Length: 237
Image (cartoon, rainbow, N blue to C red; front, side, top):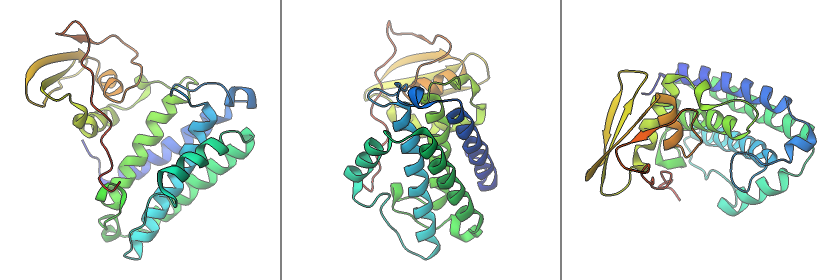
């Protein structure tokens, strides 16, 4: 389910404000504690969110001028270096950088015309509107990764459905994955092969597909939940 551009921008703006509120709850010691992502502290998550906002602002700004640029100067290696080095900085600096990066992204988006939103970008060989949807996913999923009280159960149903659509590519090869919501009239069949049904609340189905801890239990017609495939790769890489 893909909302219109104005709705996506609004939801990203709300998610940005929420991220700042979550980071405000931390002190420097808590910033250095583990996040929900293996190998990353909360500081790593915050630095990544700042870098990601700048990268999407860069995609939009280039698209406005009919250009396409890489997400990060220096590619994956520079992305990783920035996250590792930035995570060690004081919380106040990380907070300020996140605030500035998010504001810059929203300001650039505010200058886009309807035609600009349809312009191509190098990210996923997609369009500017796809970067807004990607930022929505980044802001909502990494808010959970901060591990300071925001959970998949706090996601909107629209976000959960969008996430399920985007992550359908994670369906295991040789499996017909049947997702069935227990809290809504929602069912989806993905892939081909041996049928396996996974059932649970809509938001928890999305969390599971995103590789995150669920809030309620999921049931499966197999003894164990299927092993999902990798996150959809960026075809531009």
